[in-house]
Image 1 (cartoon, rainbow, N blue to C red):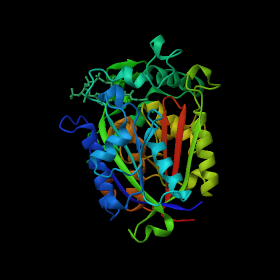
Image 2: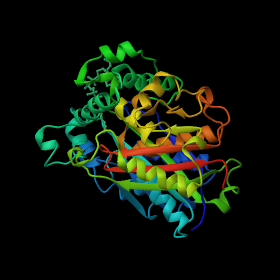
Image 3: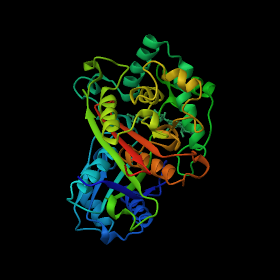
Length: 386
Ligand code: COA
């Protein structure tokens, strides 16, 4: 296998983007990533596009060909990748594997979702749950994560304030990110007093409904210096699966796919959780951010709440989590999220994260989750090739 490097990244602004169409968003992101890589479109050999549900959100399927045509890059092979909210992470993984194997040399991984065109996004999002055993019984993602939150509070004494603290952190960082959907700080009280969605989770515990796209260009590591002085090396790209339905799990407080994918990633990279300086983790609901920092091994199981309360994942701490604002504040256009996470870690590693830049960054991690953890994709990125 060949080593792989990221040489270009981009993200559109995330938010309610009425003036931009689905296809415009992904082309905008793709063109910006190609420019960032100092390439031209004709240099690309293939593209992989993460998208959860173009069909339900904008009535559009056959997304690979649509994007290849609209970007003017046809006839290059363009493949849509779907794994619910982990679609972007898996598209990135497909691109990395294609380059690592030697099948292609220059590959774009993009992600896109346009969610705000439907009146109610909830049924489309719920399609990522088990239809027979969850969605058709009226269960939605906020209620699934609410059960996980309740159980964590019961088993570990985690407080409601500690869970809310993850959303507060996201908004604090998002306030510094011009591409974030929400660029304002919030307080613990604001989270606790916001509209109830599925107890104990309130509106400000939830990631929003978002439009947006992001793109990443990957090439063989040996070629990276031809395009950029600041290549970011892919040290590991892993994926694991778990039961899609929550009730089939042994535990509601551990996302086993995260544990397995991250342990494999640390092994491949030859790095440990404590070697990570920044991490973009999947906080579709505040409790999921808390579970992530435990399941990734940054903190012991049951200690995530205290870590949040003690400020141990802030920008000036040993592990700076969700410097972009995370899904909560940057926004969560489902298929774009995994790619946007890689873009943020790349900007941090290249020292290009402006006001949210963390000092002394060498290694970073992304965790992109589908559903309640049926899929987890982990990437470890570094300024060091080995
Ligand atoms: N965080 C912060 N503010 C939010 C928000 C969120 N998640 N969602 C909406 N808002 C704001 C809106 O900007 C709007 O503010 P304004 O009045 O100043 O313009 C206000 O709250 C009402 O917005 P509205 O669109 O009417 O909210 P809603 O009640 O329809 O939707 C949620 C709120 C929480 C139900 C919706 O954001 C949601 O479903 N989130 C979860 C998405 C999800 O499940 N993703 C996949 C995870 S697996």
